Figure 1 (cartoon, protein in one colour):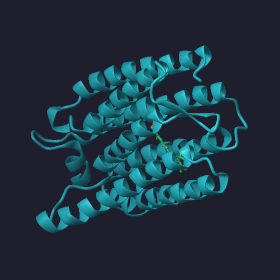
Figure 2: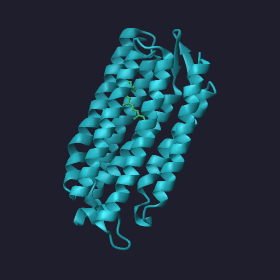
Figure 3: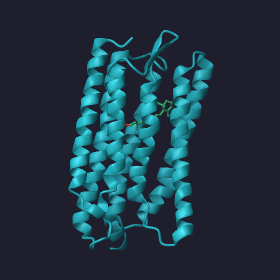
Figure 4: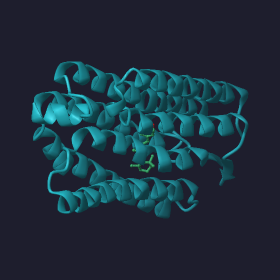
Length: 252
Ligand code: RET
């Protein structure tokens, strides 16, 4: 059951995501046209989450399994928003292509690997949340954690290596973004274990509240950090007309 206390936090989540979408859109409008691809992923992250919070606040996307309340709407949200968050990060990290087709195939493989592992992390996570048998549930949880490790390994390995080959400005922005992202993403499996999906150590209202706070930070906070970071880089790199900031900063 969704209590009225939980509903309040879900409405706060909805309002925060909707306002976040407006804020990201407006800060995106202040970027040069050549750099306005950066806010797109972050904008849709907030819009998708706003839809998910709206559903949950109205009692939708929730099921009772084994006497536990599972908000499966969260996983629908995450299945789309976590790949988009990663795409936003990759758009900053990956340098402009130089060897046309060959580079672009390598790039596509890296993106496919990162997003593929991420989607599997969420899908196996929702299966874990909906499993009644405890042993099977924790096996799914461990499988999901394995995909989480794969995402982190790709982001902190080849993606970080690509970012550091670019100018100091881009690698500094990447460092800020990747530190924020990894610190926040670690909270999700911990909260899952402590919440109703896992051990039920913390109450459901606390869980709904903490999820709303980290969701807002990981989506709106991360999006604003990315867009304002690109804006700062834009002023420093002074790209020429028609040239993106990432390209100018990489060749500076
Ligand atoms: C689950 C449970 C199973 C184990 C793991 C999980 C990881 C979830 C993550 C979610 C990130 C969500 C974000 C949402 C947007 O703001 C599915 C909780 C590893 C990392 C960043």
